[in-house]
Image 1: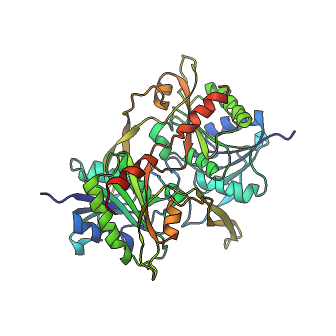
Image 2 (image 1 turned 30 degrees about the vertical axis):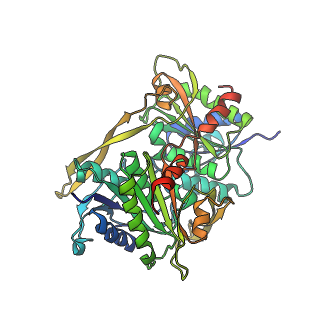
Image 3 (image 1 turned 60 degrees about the horizontal axis):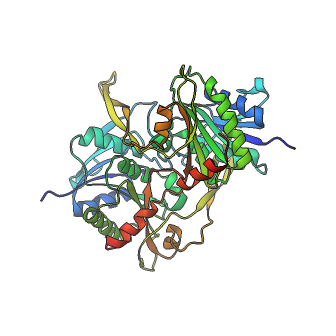
Length: 258
Length: 258
């Protein structure tokens, strides 16, 4: 039987340690093809490149592993579109995986996440997909404790199929002395980033800003991704791309005069 | 009684005709403040600027209307964050409106839309918000038929409140000889963009690509935004920022061995 074909992308760029871990684990399970950004694309959300040109070139980033790879000037969503419609053409990947992101993409961060936009783009294209993220922003982050879980989740996704029109958002606790307790399938916690802007003056005395901020979790539920990660579980949130607040349709129809 | 405070943003940039229409209509209802990108940010999805600096400067774009305005180097989501945390500080807008976008943001386009990311960012911040888009991509698009509906929807939103944790995605049919039939509160149609990549050679003989594509609607429902727009209705989809596919949690828990 042919090995499953696994397409790998990310948002930290093709040379990030996280994608290297993911490629190595994916190679244990299937044939791997990489199409990833040629530089960092963190925080790009579901951006696509429509007013500008795109580059796509063969990359030597995974030559040592014997893996075919392409680097793209665009966003993670662009990478998936180019992989499907240009690189793969008639071949259909059995699974699309993105990451492993250097930093959490739990709860509300899913919306800002380039890692998850690659996975969600794949789901829109009808391809089973998973985004993986580690709650450690460092370039030197230790991914070793994630490998067995990444492999298991990939194998389960291939065996049982991911529910239709859904991409999985998988987050791992930062490596610590306490071993991971297990895996929880969760809902997205209700939380937000509380921004602050660090105002500075450039050498020409013109103002500029750095966005900073802290994460605020409003959600006391024990069925959320935040709860799972805080208690040293791997969190899996199945994400959909239907943004409709179905419950709100009736509310508006009842009271508004349109 | 104090006039309601309405914050206006967009993704086509502060000098686009669409935001000018929106500012003029919003002025009929309340006090207006503009914080918008200093150039086009279409297709930016929910991108934010985290690896780079942000500029925010006073703009003369609406001086003729006596409206305070700021132009920002960042994305639409950045604009809303800067408006709330830096420009407004302790003042809270009664409504955030974004647009009017030059081009449709119906169905799946909501995910790629900078216009809607400004509105959704506001909803995350707990602010009532609406994104407006016209199904006409031209810079010379005629917005005249939208004005009475924009005003009515703004007034209804202020009177009845938008359901919590929800942003409205409002799309208008392109101006035609047939008058608009009315307003429908809808769900997001199940549709996608079928991409093609136009491959070209630059003057140095290196390949590059333009993303092109066509819209494919899989959804035969008559309760969708696509149906409404096709039949010359204004469509309103209430959008949420909880991406959880709640129905899929049970499916995974039942069959996967994690």
